[in-house]
Image: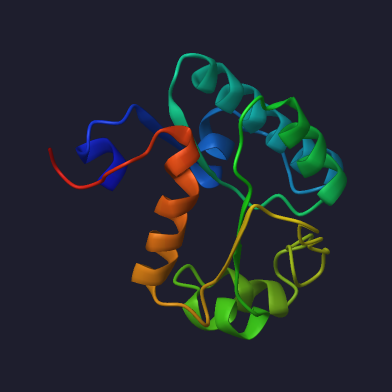
Length: 154
């Protein structure tokens, strides 16, 4: 919201929303997850070509697919938002980790399916070790080369 309120053309592609509207019917097999991430990347690139800052928040568990999608983006910033599994379970407001640990959700990233972390992200935010304000500050600094100079309402 800060970027939008500051007047920047920005769009947020949330993985859950995209899955419901653009990738409805896809499951959580590796092939379906890869298809979902490729679709998100395609839409992000379309928006970016028109000067929109695109923020993508999606679980992209497979490094090869993530790297291929990032390679197609002319300008990008890969931000690895990271926390240990124990912390993710504690923060899970939807109860999905508990269900996955009981075996109710197959192919759940980090539980019954792998997560391959980025090898060299542009920005690595350890949310278990950094405050929200520190994460935001580092993100805004990393966005400076994309023309983001100031935030907050204008």
